[in-house]
Length: 229
Image (cartoon, rainbow, N blue to C red; front, side, top):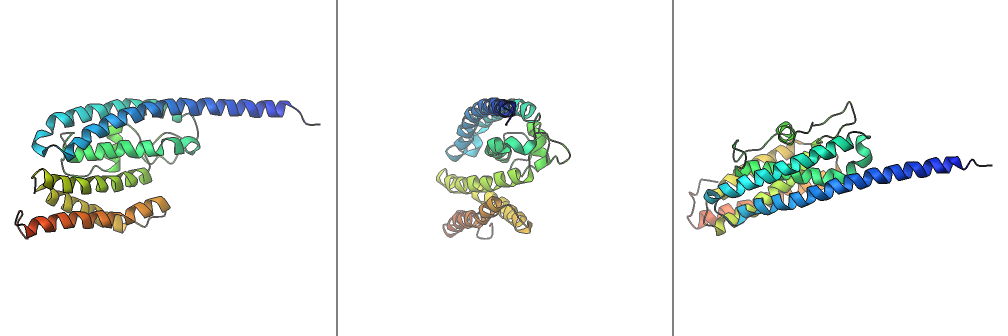
């Protein structure tokens, strides 16, 4: 005879798990709405001259700070459970906010090293989230999430190189080209085991070529010095 309390306990575990997932989903839905606001603000870089972006970038930074508060709420909840049990629910969200931070910093939203790359530790500090925690189950940023966000950053900058020319800014594509080439060189050093990350990193060379074509075209039109690239 099978003890029915076995299944009663299993059902209780399922119900508890469902409640946790629902709590996480509610937090992530709020973060997604905030993320869309941030994305909308940062996307103005594609249609507004760099010199006129100050007010927009200030608003983007404020929007990112709203997300930081939401991520703190997610961290408090997620850290009560084994990290990888629910990780799949927020992994894409983590990549998105990392992208917002590194792109915002690159554009100059954070009064720090405009045109440069934040390290994973600096991203963690900006978001108030630990990085690469291996000795306990707490919410944190992984190396893979950071690198995936960087592949998205390169794609965003490739678009920006093209749109900068439309805005009459011929120096920004040069800045982007140098920056992205450095990033590409860094990725080539890595021995990537993650299949998704490896596939996304393979696409980087196409974005590098896209940016190079923009710079080459500017050079042919004598809009930049021929040796500037």
